[in-house]
Image (cartoon, rainbow over all chains, first blue to last red; front, side, top):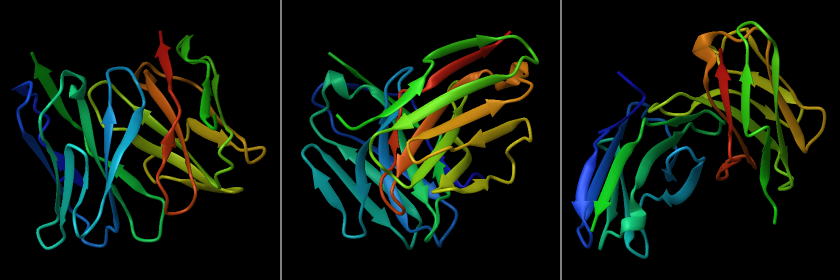
Length: 110
Length: 111
């Protein structure tokens, strides 16, 4: 079993739609969680950190469920510019080991 | 602007010919990381430096080495590149426990 698993997609949605991605992780000792966005042939860029209480940044909402070991990302009112690959990232306790999921591809269409 | 810079952006090398990729940062972060990302796959951590302390991932091939001569610079050396080493190589920096910031990557092609 992979340490971090994501549905690769692709998710094809119309502009204005709401879309949700989930990510599961296997190491219950994991402490830090992030969503990164990666455009084609570019480097990953931090979208948002994920906190236990859940957090929101504009149209983006991230949730963490430690009991079930998954994190989620909700995108409301999708824009064409949201088309990208979304990477789930999990970091180990007190360390530097960072595990990336393989990413979920999102295509937003007009 | 503070940033992470990688050179070259594109590198083509021949099978078995050593290659060095460069990363520099103006963020003054303690930690520098090297990742390998193959097409449609997740970035895979190769190793990281915490200041001068080098930490190799258990499954990183011996063919991959790294040097960090000072806080700002870190190099990835591939001693004898194979065809399977064709990938994007990403450098990232952070302070311990903080968010990682990535450079634009070096796209390496081994012929």
